Length: 359
Image 1 (cartoon, rainbow, N blue to C red):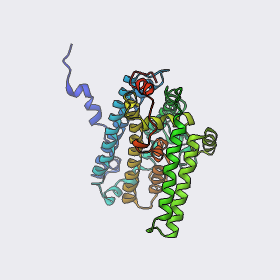
Image 2 (image 1 turned 180 degrees about the vertical axis):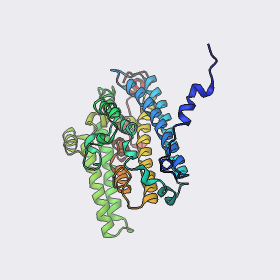
Image 3 (image 1 turned 90 degrees about the vertical axis):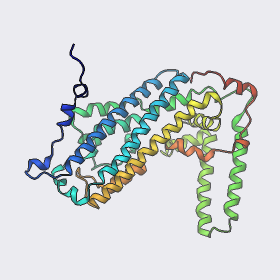
């Protein structure tokens, strides 16, 4: 058997010979086009790795029961995705060494190609759980239509399969400690939260540093928090918000997630807490990447349309605001209370939470 060679193992001949400058084809090679191509090829390689890690997590949570060690493994996979996302954001700094004038040297050669046509990024969004109905419209047509025909099938399949959001919801709904005999958590918790909310209202009303407009604004925000808390306690009100597309996570799953955050110090909840926290991190880093991308595009092309026909900066900015997936988990911090105010768990429940559960 022929000894394994580094270059052959990595397929470097194919990789390093696949930077074809379009500007060179018209007889005037633009120096910065090489950087532009390599940066985007690297993005696609990292997207492939993210999909690989996501598929592993999806397999774990597709099981009828998920043992604690598997939740810990999913956290490790998410940690890797998070580190990759940080690299994706940092890469923008390298691309920004190319000036707007440098970009103009070959920009016209790129029409009508666009990063919007990245099938792998669409797969990532779908696998995480971005709903079709929540996508910002792009040119008045199905986003899949601009993707290569041979890639559309995979993207379509990622739309139809259970996403991580779907599997997260089912997993949370199976959480075994939502109801324990002899302990009405929600009644005791409601008393504590209402006390805190009432105190916050008084602080707003009596703050000498607020103008009348500021008092009015903060009271409206407070009313939203109260309404959201009522939905947390009342399944019917929560369902109304789901029907209005203001909530997506089921009432049972939302309550389970909150309990995991509140009692994260209990041994059995360490891994579930870390898992939920990492999902928030992934969502925030995706938003950060979109925001940085939008700022870079504004710097490079100003108010011009993108090479693929999108509204450029405006479109990217809108996706950063609206393409969030796990924001409901992040919003649960609204209902966090001090540890000293948390309802004390009975000893038999604490003992149960110290042992192994299949969630």
